[in-house]
Image (cartoon, rainbow, N blue to C red; front, side, top):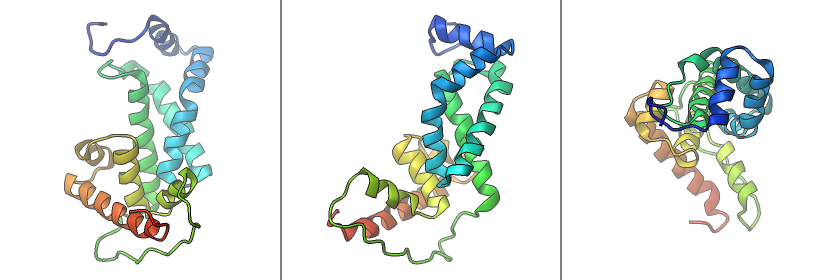
Length: 181
């Protein structure tokens, strides 16, 4: 252990140290190491290719500015993921208000054919309202707890739970036509 929590490799420690000194090559290496996974997360949260790219760039600026604050309480990747999630949510929060239960619209019916594959499931998830989608992705795909999601998104744990519940209900309706239960 490093005395501070999570054990990191010597190579990753050197990468962090070099980033702290402003070494552009180290920053590029760090970016290249995590960009694909983080872009996927950005896209899943924003449902917009261009916005996801903007979020990714803004998040990595935050990573480089804040790397001195990395305390090794988790892996470097988990720390970066938290910054990405918070950045993505801030971006979509400006554009979207969480769907209230009273104003919930009936989901549109989408006919995707007879077989369910990853592409259809991804489309179903992306068709969810932004608040539902964000909570669903963070909990069901990324593995965060309701408490963590509530803290990241600035909502109550109860709101997180209800958003997930209604996201799952909408997904069930969308997938029911495919014979999936």
